[in-house]
Amino acid sequence: MHTRRLIIAAMLGAVAAAPAMAQDTMKVGLILPMTGQQQSTGKQIEAAVRLYMAQNGDTPTGKRIEILLRDDAGVADTTKRLAQELIVKDKVIALAGFGLTPLAMATAPLATQAKVPLIVMAAATSTITAASPYVVRTSQVLPQPAAAMAKWAVDNGIKSAVTLVADYGPGIDAETWFTKGMKDGGGEVTAQLRTPLMAPDFAPVLQRAADAKPQALFAFVPSGQGAALAKQFAERGLDKSGIRFIATGDVTDDDQLNGMGNAMLDVVTAGFYSASHQSELNRKFVAAFKVANPSMRPNFMAVAGYDGMALLYSALRKTKGNTDGTALVEAMKGMSWESPRGPMMIDPETRDVVHNIYIRKVERVNGELFNTEFATIPMVKDPAKAAAKP
Ligand code: VNL
Image 1 (cartoon, protein in one colour):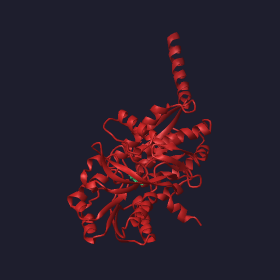
Image 2 (cartoon, rainbow, N blue to C red):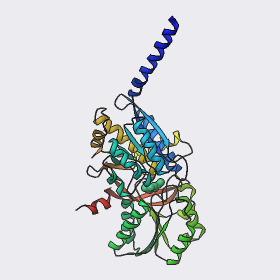
Image 3 (cartoon, rainbow, N blue to C red):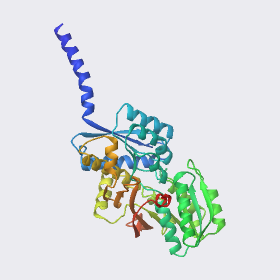
């Protein structure tokens, strides 16, 4: 009798203790493509989020931050269902990740309903931040590198180009802003070619680009597809055709660049991050990332995940640990800090990322291929949002 009462008391105690323990942690839902076509993005971001927490502790304001990692395999319906569960069952204080534009777009309405910050660490279509007042972005928007690439091209005597982009949000943004930049600078885009997001075949479009004989071929494909594009490019002899290959930094992604081979040497790209960015902070970031993940080199996705955590930690400190979603987003607006990419800021009006865009050239340094930065366009806002303003 006595022991039975003790057991019941212990059981009741356990039940009562469970919610108290849950309140001692602040849960963050990290939804990433950990499997499927976009898995390199998921792996890079997860590694960087864990590195940030290992370096900065998991208690920015006293309570422990707990990451709930969920794999959406890059499927929008799954992202949305996982986000719903994380909001309702796990009571997360923020959602983060979002490896592709459709995944962020599908989830944005839930962030609005639940008033939960949605930190975009990968997806890069300009309009995502307009889909919810709770979206804040630490990755990039494609109009930033695309416009910069066009400006560099016309300034360097390139008058005709063909574009080749993945046929969805960020690709259309890249095509639009590269084409506009060429026209504004007195050049022209003679053909706009597109490939499907899923399982693209680059051979036919590269053949069409070769036949069009432009001075340059400008490309955007999402992180993870650059190696396949580079392989096809070299196999068709385009590196020896006299057509200059230029691209957004997504194509010469640091995750894959080293395996792309000499056909990519001297390719010029515009991007916000290079693993060889010359700063003390970046050298430390790359070194620590490699110690924690010996087979990987951090790419722009990793740095966007790292910065997403930096943003969340700073916002929590600013609200003194208040996890109200509206208060957190308010705290994030206008925040600026030094990232491994260089200086960055969250535009207080648009909640979108403002950062340097670098013009880079692929070079072999100490045996490894890198995007060597040789020119900087400082603190670039999303040109698409500036254009949309009345
Ligand atoms: C997107 C844009 C995805 C750029 C990417 O890699 C990228 C997107 C996965 O908005 O879906 O490099």
